[in-house]
Amino acid sequence: MPESRPYHHGDLRSALLAGAERTLREKGVGALSLRELAREAGVSHAAPGRHFKDKQALLDALALSGYDRLARALDSADDPALPLQPRLTALARAYLGFAADHAELLELMYARKHDPESAELMADGVERTVGLIGRVVAEAQARGEIVEGDPEHLTIAIGAVLHGLATFTAGDKSAAYASQHGGVEELVHLLLHGLKPR
Picture 1 (cartoon, rainbow, N blue to C red):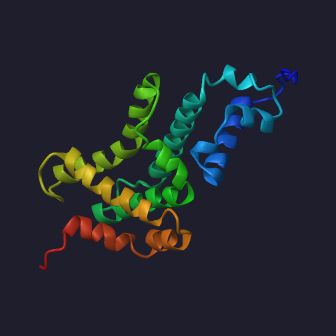
Picture 2 (tube, rainbow, N blue to C red):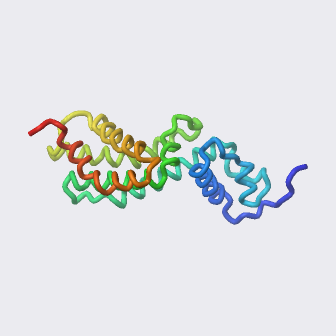
Picture 3 (cartoon, helix red, strand yellow):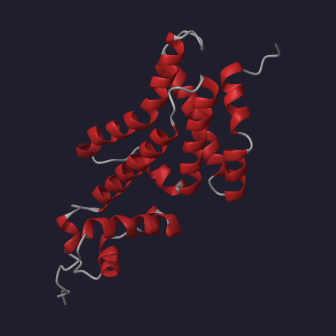
């Protein structure tokens, strides 16, 4: 028998995204269900269809929300007036802080599976986050602070190190805290100066 509860939620889209993120964090992506999210929000099982055509559309919207929040965190941490090493350290702290607090969301953001209709929005999300680090790298190259070469390749190297550390620490909040506060300066120092003795 179909549900007859009326669509009555004030901001259903936000409620569905909040519920989806909670489910993602607590149970994983496999547990996400539009029908279950509708039940939790107190609306008919058909109501989420007004905002998301299917589960993949919901996941893409959640990923885009993650990119928005990560971009805000990076923008807040960035200070172009700082010398390169403390500037990169602040950006690394912001990235790792976001990763520690939103590990499952970060994994979803970088998932390969997205609806083709969302591809341009996802690319924009990447540009607003990874692109900021790329601009810092290009500016540092222009000032002669780091090696010449393709800034995109250098940005990928920095991003891989940060994302790798985020992945290592995702399951252990104490390790994540230590990586954010104790080892970030050393990590950025190693990125900028390498391992070779001087």
